[in-house]
Length: 406
Figure 1 (cartoon, rainbow, N blue to C red):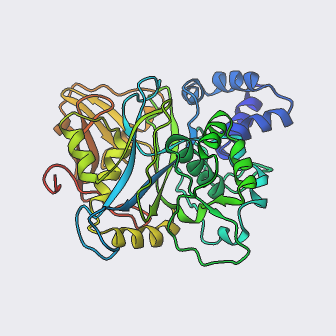
Figure 2 (figure 1 turned 120 degrees about the horizontal axis):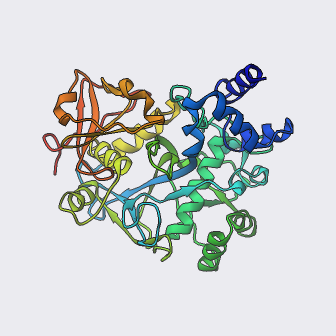
């Protein structure tokens, strides 16, 4: 019996990458209670039990929304501060990362993948919208983006719907388009759609995500999924209790929208250049976590919004690498190892344990480095990149402080 349970559990959990809703659905079909299944699995595969004890990564989406700076007259202007980014500050009542600066976004809701969207989003919007995520070492706790749930729209659509809905809830910016019978060429740029009773709709959507479908139906519009370009995919380190698998999209809007925080999840919002945000972080005015810190430094590689726009559109069809950082406690601080780092694979068991090593950070230097130094578990201090080439035709960030413009 144990041998049967052994093979059965391992095949369906690991080889089939069963997770989340798919796991529950499979248990129901087999008339097996998930609690019983997990008990069998924990007995047979004790080394992997922490995948479940620590919880799954919850799917989430975020938008890096950019606009031209007010002093820039056209998209061709070459200037280090030629674009600004919409950033929000999480309210202090949040249990996860209170008072941190983040990009708009949040977790997926069931209604984001509803088949009702097929009657709202035009068919021609599906072209060139693809997410080709590179899986992370077969980790069974991480859901692959290609795993579309039965009776749901494709992930490449639902994740964009999530990002657009969450941006509306948190900031009041509605990245939607009016339904038009004429099939116009997608410009690749986003627009804020003004609708009647927008504040009322914002409260309704925040109360229940399914109201976003009603918003679109009653206002003859649809989420502008074609304006969101896949940019990156970050996962919360496995040692943390609250974990998210977040797909970051990038979008461009011609003029900044006078939006406002919702006063619940978000307390402040602003349009700022990457340098402005990073400068406030460095002097301790604001707090950033690794994904935002890394992506802001990556955006500093582009000297114009035109250059960034073209790169994002062309690169997005390549998909992106799934990044699950590994945090190592050293004698003089924390190391966050990223995929591609020369010693990244030496700490592959961080799914089960947290490494605490009585050695200084420089003891772990290697020929290839793709890592961050931290003074504590959350706040990054310095990005180190050496002999590293990113996958999926992406671009490496500027590192700090030597080649930064700060």
